Image 1 (cartoon, one colour):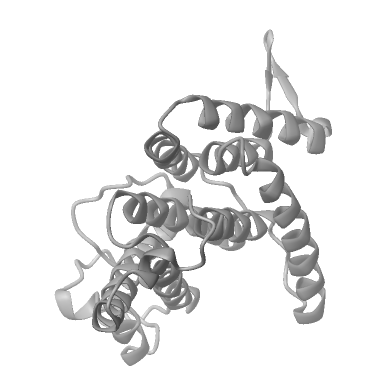
Image 2 (cartoon, rainbow, N blue to C red):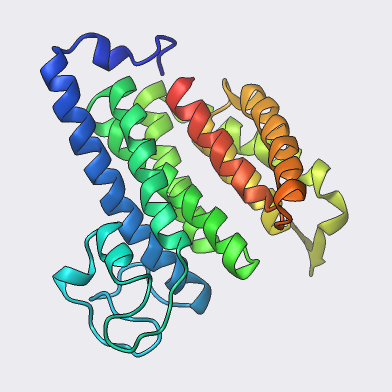
Length: 253
């Protein structure tokens, strides 16, 4: 990764920066639209790659006019066009968040392999956080996808396997220490709780070199979001702090 803020943008002409920002935001909105469908599907045991988008209530296949990120949901008042069932406005918020997240990824790295891989990791960490908020579960499938993208990212950037392997090991140790009371024994094997598995996933994505920085950010984000949850009287989900910290480390180093 780079230590220069928005390093890629600094080498571009202004007109390319502006067009790149627009394209990055559009790609983030599209990723957010896909993420919203997974936020509904994954807790219900459905596939990552269902053939067609459909209403989760009436099952009607959605048309192109129903799938424009942000705009379709806003114009429909966050209700299904066909059965009138409401759906969470958080889906639109997810689209906006990822639209915003993809912009600094572009500004820092430009378009290329790193942009795609960090975009995938960011999308799936946001999915993990949203599912925990909505359904109070941590999605193992989303963690697997994020971990695979993290392995590819670290191998591509670091040029070796060592950093993501050691990062995952650091995550396992930290997770086992923090959530040691939730470790269970299945036969002769000790099983880590889902929160510790999320720590392993984060360790794989950020790598060994940035793991301490990630832990510091995670602690700070956890305190901040816990305080905010008390102010707005909403439940605090630790995966929100994970998503924020992983994305910040990957983009800004």
